[in-house]
Structure formats: C-alpha cells, structure tokens
Image 1: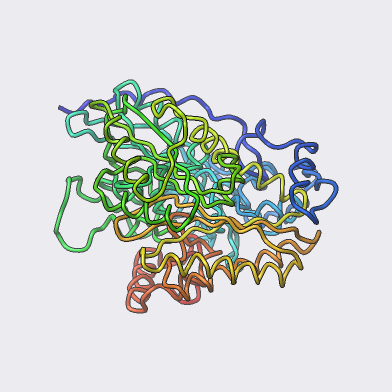
Image 2 (image 1 turned 120 degrees about the vertical axis):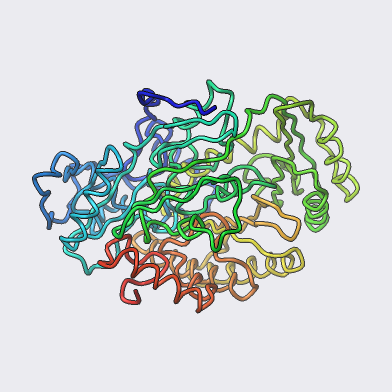
Length: 539
C-alpha cells in the first residue's frame, strides 16, 4: 500500500537567494534608509548603518587542509562558500560578519549528494583530524554551526542541502521518508500534491531543514499539542563514524530507551541525520482566528492557562504583553493581546474558536471587532511582524543596537516571578552595561497544561566596537536569571555553544556521563561538531 517514488522525484523549486551575513532572503534585507528610520525609535542608536562588506573584501584565514582527490568534486574552498558557512544567524554572528571577522571560517565546505558521500567525507575527516560541523541552512541562533574548539587540523562544514527530497510516501499510514537537507518550502511542495503536510512551521521555515529541526528539537508555529518536531518522528537514519543507525519504523514502542531520542537534539555531535520517516497530516481546509485584548497582563496569563488546560488545543495561542503588542503593531492602547487560531482538515472550526474566545472573555478579555474567519487585522499584523522580526534585528545591528531574544519554559506557578525577575535583573544588567534603559518584552510562543513557553526580547543601544562584549554580559545575565527560577535554558532554539553554561547547570550529571560515553563510542576521533553540548576535552 506504500506509494514509492521511482526514480526520485525532481528537485523542489530553489529557494530565494540568501544573505551570506544576515537573515533570510537578500531582497528582504533593510536598506540603509530603512535601517536609519528604524534606529530612530531607539534613543542612543548610531546615526549611520554599518556597511555590509562584500565577500571579495573579506580577510579569510588560509585554508589549512586540502581536498583529497577522490572527494574533490564534493568539496569547495571558494570564498563565498566559506564565508556563508562561518556563522549562524545569532546577533553576535551578524555583528562579526558586518565587521568582517571571519576568523572562524571553515577550511572546506562539503556538498554531499547522497548518504554514501556523507560516509566517505566522515571517513576522510576522521583520518585527517578534520572537525565536521553539520550545516542545514545556517539559521542557528545559538552558535550551533560555528567551530570554536581550535584543536583540529582543519574544519569541514558539511552542507546537507543536496539531500533534499521526499523519497517515499506511505499514504495509508500517513507518513513519508524524507532526506534531512530538505528545506521547509521544498518539503511541503513535494507533499502538497498528495494533500499532506508535515505541519511544522518554525519562524525559520523558509531557511531551515528537516535535519536541522531534528538535530535541534525545533519547535514549530503551532502553540499546543504537537509543538516540537519530536512528536512527528517515526524513525531516524543517522550516519556516525562508528556505523549507520537505522531505527525501526513503528507508531510506538516500549522496547528500552528510544534510539531516536539519543539523536534528537544531539546537534550533530553524535552523528549526521540523513533521513527520517515523519508522521504527516491531512492539509487543513478549515481555519478561523481571533484576537482578544486584556487591560491587565496577569488576567491574560490566567486566561491562557485556562485555555491550555481546556483540551481545545488551539493551533495558535500567542499572548503578547503590552510592550510586545505595541512593538508588533497589534495594540496601541497599552493592553496585552491574545492571538487565537484553530484549524481542521475535517470540518468547521468556528464553534471551537467561540469556546476559546468565551474562556478568554471569562478572564476579562475583550474580543477585537474583526471577523474571526477572515484572519483579522490584529492577527494579520502579528503574523507580518513575526516574519519580519529577524530582518529588523539585522537592521538594528547595523545601527549599533543590541538585540537579544531568549526563550524558555516553566510551570505556571513559577511564571509570574520569572516574568518580574527578567524585567528586573536583565533590565539592570542592560543598564549597567549600556548606561541606558532596555526595552524588555515578552510573548508566549507555546503553551502547555502545566506551563507556558515565554519568549523574551531585549533591545538597547550599544557602543560601536563593543557590541559583542555588551551582548555577552546581557546574555549571561539572562541565563543566570533562568537558572535561578527553574526555567529551561531553551525551549526551542537548542543549546549550541551560546547556551552551554546554562545547559551545563541544567543537565543531570549522570546523564552527562552517559552522553559523553555515547560520544566516545559513536565518534571516537572526536570530529563531530566539537564543543556542542559538552567540551571536546571532556569526551
């Protein structure tokens, strides 16, 4: 009953030209005039934007390792390849790229075309003491694709974007075998003709891959029920220096610890995910949305808790505090805004939306005057602002403005104190570092019956040339505050290298011992993404 594609389907449409230094598509980046206009909203910002350096002007370090002849057709040392694979898209990555700091550039960029190429490249790297940093589309905001160990003979950035196809579809079981390098839009375009969807849409959807989602345990757009990519995995295929791991494809199993769970979230330090069987859904055809305004933020929080515990499972349940609502352009009157959305592939959803709105109204919310099924002005404004935010961050970075976002999760009973502590302690750190008051906003990206996943945004004027040092101090203060209030160091951005201090404190020591033992067994030469999750010296 399985629909097998043979030969392989055509490659999906190519994605738009991407920025080598900043977020997303080149044609969406802010112009110099737009950067200056945006910075006018931040007192103390620079008067003119930093210029974007050309790749030709970059001072890339010398290539330390040559491509072996049998693999030369898979490897590149071209400046454009090396520059675009040096960093992810965190604030500190963007700033270093703008200043032309390419000290961390890989020596070579690998472009495997199939799993055999991945095996061959790993075999060569292990024998040549070359570190291998897996690279999907480079949208990491936690230092996940940047080599910092400094102990290897060379560095290979392994770009998996050539493995980008849906290989097999099981329509009866509603699942598909998909290569790890498939970008979000390409993946969905291959599923669409069959009326299916993976239904995983992170903010980075257009610029991230299935393998990246799996390796970082990514969170999607949907706020309840199936919030993380973990929930959608049937089985994984992973290439390690010690062999290939292929887990059994079943809907569920109680046979010991899950092999898939070993690799989900391992961020390329235990193996290279090459493909996965993923659970799919029928494409939704019924949708409705609404927004509700609250005068008091605590009332809005209680409303969301009630909704999260109601079993109604809204697809969207984003709560914006007053600052975030104003920044997103969805509320000018100082209130908090709750954005609700429901969808179904099987029947009308208006009655479920009405139930959700009624719960919000019971806690003092006032539904906005807009037709729920039409998307609504507040809902549309939030969505536009959500997708545009990373480009605005890049524009602010060019103007010397420090911006940091960090997401977490905690239980409902701890949230009020955490919210106050972030505003107080991170705000104090910004004041100390920059001499100016910070804009600290919060929104809920996901909600669970036992707690929310708050996402904080911090914006403050920086000093030219000191942006990285200032950001580092603010980041450290944020991580310290999360740890003090029993909140996770990350809900969906992953650990990478930037969240390592907080992860080291959060991770139980017996589990750390097991993780290091797995590293030694699967990657005995220590070449896979050194410094992610734990230091190479501790393996």
